[in-house]
Length: 516
Image (cartoon, rainbow, N blue to C red; front, top):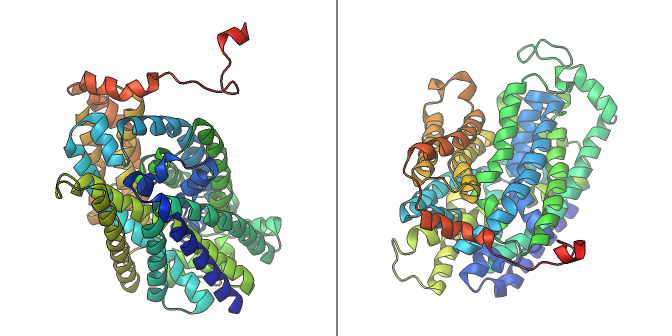
């Protein structure tokens, strides 16, 4: 217990110290929201990865989908690394950095307003962001409840409040730079922690081959009559597994808290290096989480799904580990949750302040007042998420995965296609952007309140979210063909940034004279 407490005190002390050290970088809006657009590759890559993977992944998704699909759940982690990290950086990274700086946008709603014209898009995007980031923020705490109960026997409400207060303090003090640097440290903890946990859990079952053999011997007639299905390549339900891969991988392309990491990158070289680092991080952390969850059925004697739900699986798998490793796991999940929470509350507060309140509700909002309002809203968002998390836990309303599925589906479904086409396709119309916004929010809200009325495949919020993302990629170009063309001057102004001539180092490009 002493080791656990000391590690927690050390962890929190470092987080707070960094927060206060970064105060000098958060004296203006650009510094507070984007770190002055001068963040290096390692810090950006880890900020991206730690915002991506939280307790929702480690406890909620890894447990639920490992139980449902067995070792095939590892495909989700692989998809997260290749589609959610590698391809996202390659396709979005540099174009996002170039165009957002050119347009002077610090948030995703600002980008929509500047790229497509009109304040109405900015207001709509900020409202969607605010509404659907809150349940996702609340879901972050849930993964901590069982782990802290297992490690410290502390009431869940106390865990939630302490984590929220400490996260709020360092975000309010240091803004984006404090969040990014803390993300880097938390990312290192996550890399070491997940590796140690996977090796220890498999070791407790006799090693990898023995664990795989044990998994192959497990059968569940309610899932599949095929023997050894939980140790098979694609598992018992490949179609629904694909839905999980799409939601958790493609979803990052449209989530404001993820895409805004690209706004802050320092240079071209930082993008190249950040792409590799982020992909490696995702392979280890996401791949490790889902790989670990795939062996959950080996611990069925400790798990009662009917009573504890899927969120009890991972804590049950870890309960037999030595005290030191349990302490590492607690710090690992705290790191994952606090890094994502800090990113979400910073995104929510900056979006609401800059896109909804400024010039619409509060006139003549100077920079000092903007910073003050953002800091106040961080407190408000943290408080709301804490209340929702505690109420949800006490009432046992839904699983972690469902909360995250609704949030990701609505946000990424609404924003992914307009943002992607906005960077590449000059013909994207304003009406098409509106269609994407309305379609995904309506579908996900309907899924939340009228789920039984949906087709069987789309009753799951995860599949419904994946459907919204794919549908958006079709809706935007099709609607753009049949609606009024965008203003040519506006489009030319936005895409002029790609035509600007710049000098580069010889390591990047050889001149014609030297080739000759």
